Length: 226
Ligand SMILES: Cc1cc2nc3c(=O)[nH]c(=O)nc-3n(C[C@H](O)[C@H](O)[C@H](O)COP(=O)(O)OP(=O)(O)OC[C@H]3O[C@@H](n4cnc5c(N)ncnc54)[C@H](O)[C@@H]3O)c2cc1C
Image 1 (cartoon, rainbow, N blue to C red):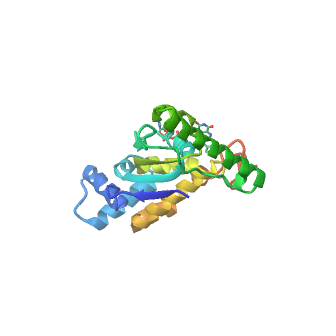
Image 2 (cartoon, rainbow, N blue to C red):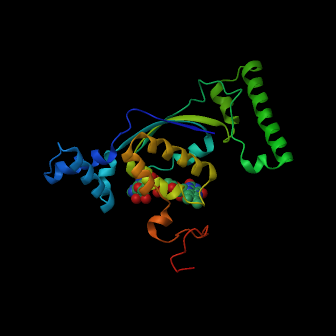
């Protein structure tokens, strides 16, 4: 599956940083690390969301499908940014790709899936080597299931908001699994991150106390108690 590499520019002590930033505005003692930590925690618990935006998360995400990265790009709150592997400079005649479990579970379907990918690869090679078609034009053939790589930068507010959408049982399986990969890596970064992941990275139903989705998975009751 995919791989998440958390870059060193990621804030290592998010709660302390948040408390330090808030302390500036509250005339607090920002030299005291414990006070900063407690103030940061208080901001998080009280829902003072603006301080979440000082917490930087930068990572390399690789081995996920171009399809799931396309969905990743819909989270625009907080003006995140990213770079994606080029389809002009990289030779994709032998790309890696995702095979969904539902396909793997069906022998005939898996055979047809592999055959289709193999056909795309053959055609890509033919267009490139025999016809000298530019890579950027051949890239039109590449499937959304092709693995890609991005360098991503966003803030904690965006990550928490994304968790609410993408840890939902109704969210796409690859996205959910990618979210769990990201949270596992962030949780390993420090105790402060581990605390945030454990207590604040949750689907929207947990935060709301009910499920707002039209077609609920049943984890939480709907607003009307059904
Ligand atoms: C079950 C499920 C099915 C889905 N199906 C689809 C689908 O079919 N197609 C699809 O495209 N997406 C789909 N999504 C993704 C989803 O609808 C959103 O597009 C995605 O979650 C990103 O948008 P967002 O508002 O949640 O996050 P962000 O864009 O990160 O926004 C977070 C918050 O920031 C604020 N914000 C962001 N932008 C602005 C702005 N311009 N102005 C003011 N405030 C702003 C808002 O408060 C917003 O709630 C699905 C998600 C789920 C869970």
